[in-house]
Amino acid sequence: MIRQDPNRLREQAARRLLRRIRDLNLGDGIVHLQDGRDVRITGCTSLDHPVERGVRYRLSFEDGQTEVVELEWRDGRIYTKRAVEHDGNSDCEASFGLNGHPTGLVELAGLRSSIDLSKASPEDFEALLGRIVEAVVSVA
Image 1 (spheres, rainbow, N blue to C red):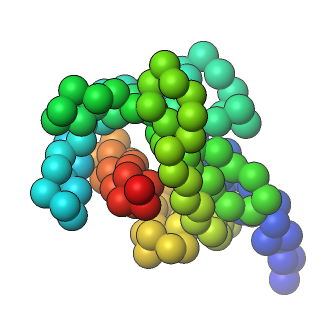
Image 2 (image 1 turned 30 degrees about the vertical axis):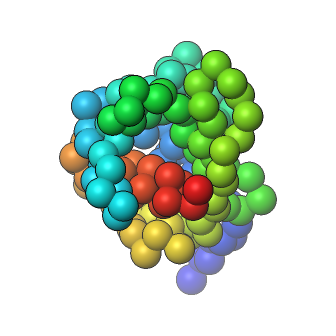
């Protein structure tokens, strides 16, 4: 039996996941936060950048504030940070362990979420992005 290097599997899975989230340019998704607020995901702002430089999505809050959430792969984890647009200061950060499997399944530890990259629909990716947004916004 040939065993694949788990670090290489994680890296491949992270690139595929981030590339798919970027390329789908998800927008108009509303995330209902635990504190009762809603935040709208209004699209990817890093469509022309390689995923190795991070994937950024614009968020709009009910009070009119606009922020950006960035997803980045480094040190074996998906790191997220949230910043006020035009300010650039990082408001809060979160990270999630990532496990990749040869079958295409990706697990995000900490979110208790998984997605099958080979079978997932755009709606599945939107739901995953919503969970990531909820987690990073809830850190504040």
